[in-house]
Image (cartoon, rainbow, N blue to C red; front, side, top):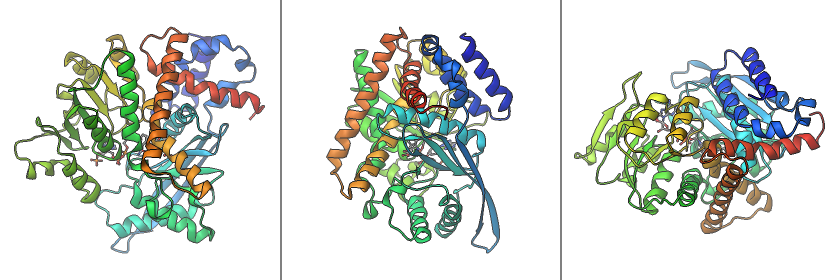
Length: 450
Ligand code: NDP
Ligand code: 2IT
């Protein structure tokens, strides 16, 4: 291995030994940058990699709030402003009980390269809290969001840092966060958050963008390898925002989606999933996916068993879309997918595949659409929301969707061209990392010791 890359990884492990997800994300990126680092000896002279792996700023704060029994609850809030070289920090907020500094740093690090790939002027950031939204009332969610924003507002604005949604944060939460920001700042600064409702500055197609974008990327990747989506069997891990709109676009493109899941288990419906019902259960009623069976008694429900392959990955499929969370597919699961004849995997989630699983899948000629590239449609459309807010104007759904389609087509082209330039074969994981890195590296080099 290139000695500069090796040394940098070693130092990251020494300094962040208690942050496994962050170390994993750094390793995956830096190892794939070797051919570029070999070409650019000047990077080492200015400690570019050392700077690249150190967040510009981490904000960690207390979030006290009152539950419905008037008991004071306390959570931990974060915002990681990782790299602002190419634009204001941009990235979602995650509310999930598993949130910790390692997860925040891995997500913000990944976001830096993803945002670069969009071609739009956005730097990398991420935030969130270990707040668990499950079982909370609407009022509890609102009080939590207001308390979270009381602190976050000190560190964001439309030119500095623009949060959006991620796991556990959708239009409802963005609304409560925006309302509190507006009251505190006494200004209508629409571009400070994205993923807003259409009534106060949201963009058409933002809700659909990550899932649609994933399928636009998938279409390009399959085309380039003389394959397509027609009549392909698709399974999807997750049934949240990304999963739902990936399913919708996959169906529109002629594929058959037969399974979706939540953290408890998965439903299998051989006729093809009833997506309107999934939307009703998840977007409106916030129920468990198991309830699908109340309307479709011929479908099957399989419960996840801790320590075993998530049930959704045991179903035979041509195309698998992990759209839930990180490290969902480990080596054992990857082996099962290959054994079941998988052709392509599209990472809607961030870092859903472990490094060993990625290596195994690529070695077995599975086309892997890497998260940084394949799920970039969400943040790209967030940047389009910011543009519309700046113009005080709104594009139509078709206008935004066309821009998204062009952006995703272009991201695949960058991955494809980079894989040709560096002889990477179908390793689009490496080519996405390289292509995303180049613009960030150029900007950092141009800006001096920053
Ligand atoms: P949602 O909160 O809308 O949905 C998350 C889904 O994943 C739910 O079905 C959830 O099930 C399931 N899930 C299963 N296991 C876990 C787990 N251990 N932790 C968290 N969720 C789990 O989130 P999104 O759809 O917005 O996000 C899904 C993934 O896509 C994440 O990795 C996110 O970072 C990524 N992403 C999101 C973008 C966006 O625009 N929203 C953009 C780019 C990437 P349950 O309800 O049981 O928890
Ligand atoms: O991971 C992601 O790219 C997101 N959660 C979307 C971020 C955004 O700013 O729209």
